[in-house]
Length: 58
Image (tube, rainbow, N blue to C red; front, side):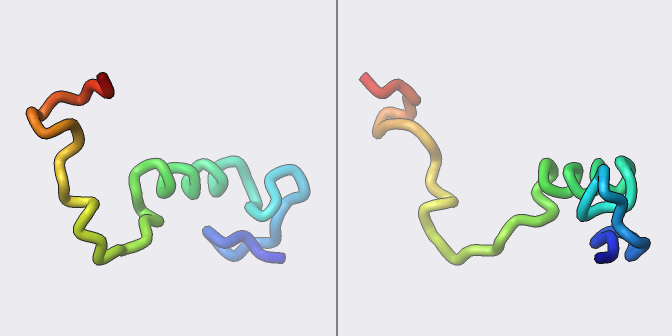
């Protein structure tokens, strides 16, 4: 199996990655939205909160 980031052979300790560096690079992409799945949902563009703009649940 090869590392999905750099294509070097995977290391058992960091599988499926070859090193901590590649694992951290992948985690960084997840955390910054680099792997976001595009959507056409209109719900994503609506503001959060109630009708008065508050975010309380009551």
